[in-house]
Image (cartoon, rainbow, N blue to C red; front, side, top):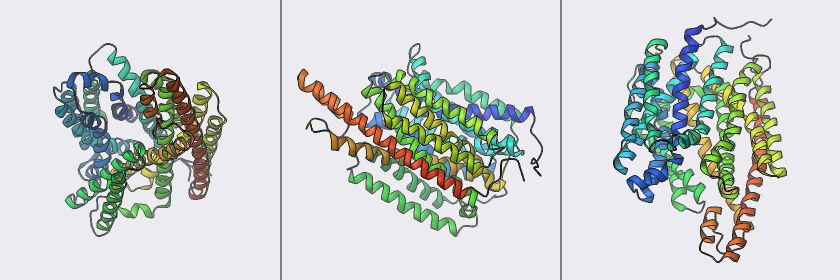
Length: 494
């Protein structure tokens, strides 16, 4: 006999979900909205190349570095309290960023935005899980959370482009202020406080070790994506892994660890976290190559490329909302595996080749099929953790996703670079299409046209190879999901 679990939530919980979804949407938008504003702020603040890189990257670095710590803080002091603190800090830092008069001031504001974002991100997911005791409602709510995160990342360049048509570059930051005010008011009125039983103080050494592990690891992976031959990047990755090993050893001996390693003893938690992280490897790498193809091969503007990429992102949104409903009738393992099989078919369409429409259609199908991994995986990860550890579990899920994306950009980027380097013969082609296009601008018309044609053809072939590798990876993940998650019954049944 099928039985539904627990009582169903009412309108107040769904309104609370709307507040949390709004915060999630802003964090995702803020991660990509700066893309089109860079030329404008560069003309105004005159940053160096290194400073401009810091303006772009430091937000994501700070979020990735502090998310584990903040997830544990939420378990100790309360997730709503931490969310409200983070929302107030995010609004204040957005004001500073919008009205920055120097590059150093803007970088400092981006640092604060990243740390504030790290307080909000795990708190929102843990609060979503706490609002809904009914398993099916909780799964749908987490699907909405996932849809907002995925959709927001794609909307960033589009929103940035629209704002920059009418306002100055600071407007891309200023929009965060009224949104976070709504989150503050809505959080106070609609969200219940949830706190774990752990009341121990944070271990400073654990916090330091987590930062020393995550920051160089993410930085090294990012640098390897730009140039796989950088010894410094490999050293950064090695340092991150070394500090990560030290971090894990320390957690084993603490009564109140920053990360409770016992969570990994839960089969559902470990399997869902692994599959989610590996799926993000594919998404991160594919997104990198497709966005570059649209701008460098098809010659689209960043805004036009962002609009094209919004189509696969919309498929992720739709899939994230539909997957929990389907998983109420069929086992999650089957839903995830079937989705990944659909994803493999989408990558096969890309590999078959064709024009811009075929490329976007294939990527859209591929991303649609990957949506159940995020929507159901997050629910499994948070649901498998005890309530007092939901903040820490949420942080691990989101950190795993961040590391997966960084790893995908590095690994699949290296595959594409190797293919590109093996196909180009011109000494001016460099190791990337962007270098070839820059070199072509210095050559006579004939050799320049030949170089551009050869480099674009090589890059297109590297994209097809990356799509093929991605198709194989998602099929392997489908098999893993059927094996590792086969014990789970449909959501909401006992």
